[in-house]
Amino acid sequence: MLQLLNLKKVFLLCLVVLVLCIGCTQPENPGKAAPDFSLEDLSGNTVNLSASKGHVVLLDFWATWCPPCLMSIPELVGLQQKYGGEGLEVIGISLDDPEEISNGDLLDFKKRLKINYKILRADWRVVEDYFGSESTSIPTLFVIDREGRIVEKHIGFSPGLLEKSLKDLFS
Image (cartoon, rainbow, N blue to C red; front, side, top):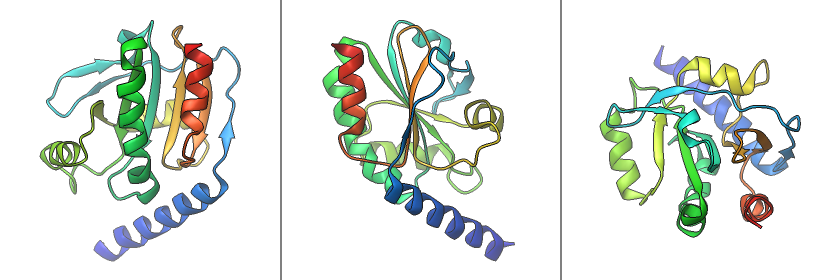
């Protein structure tokens, strides 16, 4: 069983690296509403996406074992610092297996990397709502405008690409 889990992680890591090399951006259907969700943060508090209406949201699907995800964290921290006062809300949705990475582990990880935004635990309904029948590649970031519409979807990590998206929304 452990070998199967390790093979799965290696496969996912290879897929993530491939996506990083491609570094693609996919515009979503203009005006498509971002699916609402209710997920727990690391302290057990419920967070609803609908509570972020009026803010620009960067919704980041990621995991602690994903190298491109780790590379994107400093940029997300910087964007939250730079645009938070203008209404940006970065929300990280961890796809880590709770049986392997506890909330305490994620809290330690958050402190160590000085993450200044919310980290939530994914459930598969949310993953299905955002990815549908597509394969789930991470990191994947959804840019959601102040009206709650998905305006862009970034697969992989490409330095500076998210800030270009935000400049359009904050100008």
